[in-house]
Image (tube, rainbow, N blue to C red; front, side):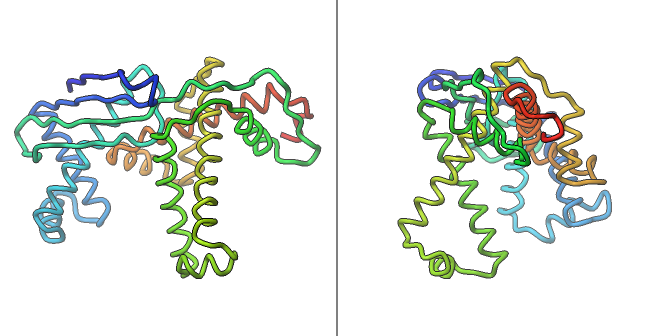
Length: 276
């Protein structure tokens, strides 16, 4: 895999770009992984993935699924080779269709951790009986100082909007019903969702900065702990699915932030360890 990085916009916009080129062999390997993942999703017998995919998807849907799967996994691998920590799943764009047994190239855009001010010296007071991790995370979020890049806020807002729509579906509720129940006009709901996105993003940036500035490391034990929290008893299956869907970067994110929060609770609070 050949990767051509562009860092011109990193300082101003907090994003980096790359052109990723796969040779024919790499393309075929990732195409096969895409079909195998499809087979696991529908619980198809091994070896029947392509046949079942052709039965269940149109030609256009199948081409899109395979191409997006290949780009996601290759981009995820490219991010793991980058000498910077990234935030969010990389965004991919292609100009040509993917064809098996041929080279394939596509563009990648990703967000890096923005360089912002963060006080890591002043102790954080945690009242007796209060959740230390929550208190510290909120304190770090509030201490973050600087301009949050628009690209990051846009990505976080998309996540918040998706989560909000899922909340509505789970509650079998329309957006209008939600606004009525919470006595919100459309602009007030918009402001609430935007603030939710900003709060979550600020907390995540703060934790990423703790991780970077304190020279912390996240090993496979931390990753395993995250997998156990997400899918107890099915850790390896989840790891494989995240690998084959190009979402390992999300696992790395969670592990880094968990390590950073542990450090902050341990080093920025003066409460008894029993209250942590």
